[in-house]
Image (cartoon, rainbow, N blue to C red):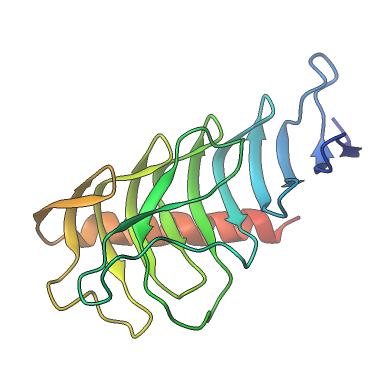
Length: 186
């Protein structure tokens, strides 16, 4: 398998190895989606699989209904990810571009990792089928975790049970670093 550049009719692009038997992206590569989202990391059978970094266009915004009590908002992803990813959002100036570092399975956030939005809000913890789902912690731009600490077990992006989740948070941080390392090798 050698590195190849493939341009797609929808404006997307892939740079990396292609399996000769299937013609699908495979291995460590970069995929740029038509909306400007960029994935760098492991790919298997054309889908994001293993560790990688997903960076979204700067224009991504989350829904917020009450600034004092942030509610779940749906982050528009791409057609590659068939189920939405949920996280909290607040209106702040961007301090880093929105993105995700962590584990993927079948093209979706799955396992542990960190997602952050353009406003500087992040979720560090577990994901299932492209959703915040499992143990984790939300961190706001000012470095706090909310007046009512947003740490515990989440179901479909909603905090269900408050509890300390330090082991999961440390695993997610470790996987995010591993994903950055994989993406940095490209």
